[in-house]
Image 1 (tube, rainbow, N blue to C red):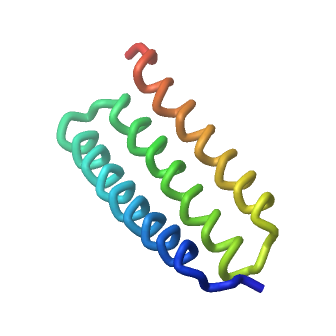
Image 2 (image 1 turned 60 degrees about the vertical axis):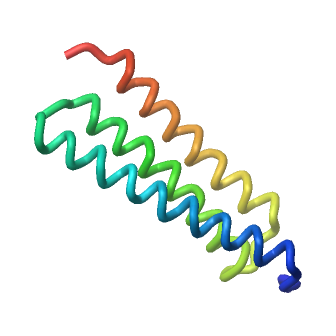
Image 3 (image 1 turned 120 degrees about the vertical axis):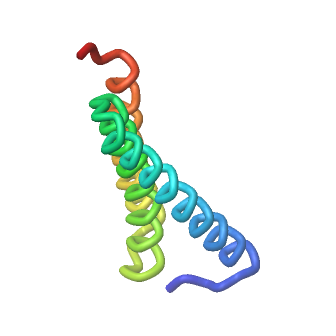
Length: 95
């Protein structure tokens, strides 16, 4: 069971802030993709979407489903790494 300490609440608030900021970046990148039809911006939106999803999934697994913290961190980290790959691809991809 999760113990609701002061550190837990601080970490939860930080996760929510990261989720909101990540969602805003995804929105801006996708809007830029739609406006300019720029394929790299689509991959930036995808990358930040995966990073944001990793943050969300990590919190859901740990708090709501009661998974072990290492399982939650590993799942979030894998999604974050795939998101970084998408962002790197957007930088180096040619048209």
